[in-house]
Image 1: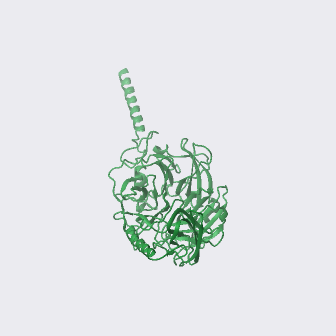
Image 2: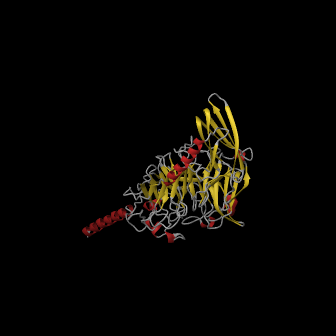
Image 3: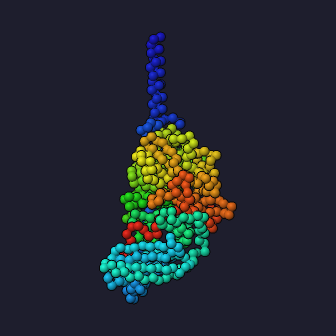
Length: 562
């Protein structure tokens, strides 16, 4: 009897140990798989990250065709300039010199002595002049003229200053053509230019014209090159510009160009057998090493909008690729049963933002209703901002915990970015994003669709807590609700915020609203731009907006042939 009892006790201990091992190695039906056949442990030591790089598929290539054509154009300008006698009083002026930016020009002239220059395009009121100084002393001058009005006789003044201090001034006019017939309508509902962040408001479309307006909603820059989603100023002052070749449907070309339309680099993103237009579907950013990080599709899988590639800036080669299926359970994408499940769009990455402070990236996923921060390039997850519904236990360690019971998680969000330290607490970080408030996968359904908002969150990554500290948009209700697209930018000069609600269904039709507001709570409206003239499903809406000076702050000395 004692022997039988001892045997039973030993068996019981073995069974207990067996189930404990099973529990802590994740081998049960409730645990998640992270993009592989391996089970994920639920202990806090588990690190979810991208898989190590294997063989990288080459999806990108450098392309020189635009630059080759450009050299011929510049050679013709140079020849014409050298054949004539062009002084400050008789400059050679070329409107739209590269055939890509109709509200720009170059003025070419010579001075007897080395001189620096200032160019001014006269505005229609005291806040509308656009001016730029070029401080290098030269005798041969090729001056970019930016900020012309369309369908207008523009007055331009160029002042030269020699090293002796002697100045000379010349004014001339440039007459421009009207905007294209299919251009969108831009109007201001409210404008207080004395309180606005410096620069133009640049409207970035889902398709067609990228353009910039001043505080009167007057267009002062646009490009005839088709644009989709990618329009961002780089560290050298150039613009990263997503476009396509004339006559084709796919946006598969990324240009590094200046505001005159001069191209310095061109990259083609080549996805075999991809049928849709959005090859680089939402974003492309510059990394500190100068390379580019682009959101693309994995053509070796049935899924879309869940991969990124890093592109070497010098060679155009793909040097890394990353799949978000590495980071999430298989059932997130294999069993995705939403309205978008037919085309494999389970993740829908709509933003990537680089955080130089700690070499990390912020990523927004519309269809998983989340924002997350992860290291780059390792891809180790730091935190996830998302409603706690429908997450396996293995992810509890990454989910931020609200500090209040009435906290609302973002739903279908866009465009996260970092903000300065507002509370003088090194343990916390502030982030701004656009909360569309359209629940796709998880969230509080009763609030979905009532409003959209720009929202500021304060996150403590050590305590894994989150709180909302500012918002704009909720008070406008459905008049500011955008179920797709959107943006929120912190403006460093004033502390204002620029909030874009891009796809608003109103009684008069569709419109986009770009609103600059103060940091107060409730926020005060400083500038309210209303964009109309597009139809549902036309993709002509404002995808995002940027506030920046028309001339880059960086040194810019235009060189023909350079």
